[in-house]
Image (cartoon, rainbow, N blue to C red; front, side, top):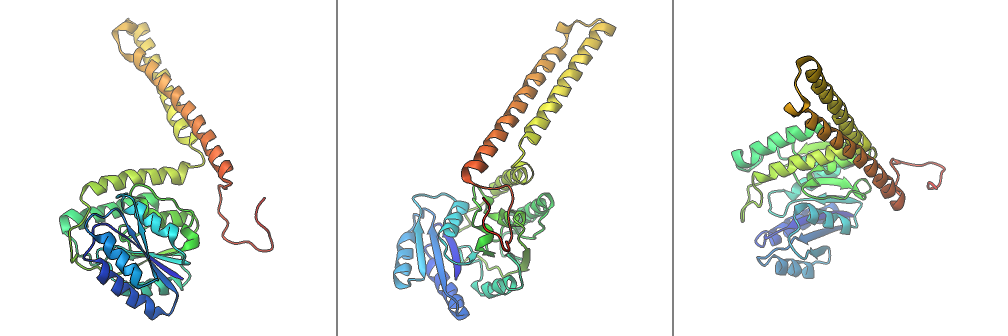
Length: 316
């Protein structure tokens, strides 16, 4: 089954044409399908239109969130409720073209686990949308090592077994290909069509770039230090301790060779502060280590992922 998930927020004019265009494409595939529309706390009549569409077609599933939680949370809800083996998220503003769905599926059939859309001819404002997006994509690709032209394109295709354990927060839906690559998934990118917005206005501005940068810092931390947080906190603590002793040595040197009293320089106070901060940082690292072990053991999770098994049962 193919599951198309669409988060919508105040897109009352777009719902019907979106459903009609997606349904035409999915019906032509001859494969069982469902379309999951997640109402992210809309206040413009979107909820009523969604209910009407769902009443007319049982392939359409509607989820109404209690309030506006944001695109990432709405997308996570769609993924959680999806029953298909292949999940295709897309935007609800008609800027994604459903005619690209067969091309995404064809690429999956070549053996890939994630197919990411690339809006190579993006129909958005150059300075406020395209340029910040280009900079963000270069930054994300450089730091993550997963080189994609367009992380912000919602139109993608995933095998469900690749993302079934992914939990998304903040603005992290754009980083799903990175999560998938961590799990050993094969990721590829193909150009997709992008259409100008027909109704309403974009819900996002330049402030989203700063959110992406902060989320990227979280992603990088989780990638390298999730199971060994002591390397971050302990490493920072050791650096501060070494700096504290070096600062104290400089202060003592000034006292012995220059005759400068310890109370005439801020170096002793700085050394004490660095020493305390170093100790606290190391203790935080130890606490984080205990929390991670509690997390993995209480959830029955492992610090590794198995791609396949032959002649063996599940791990004990």
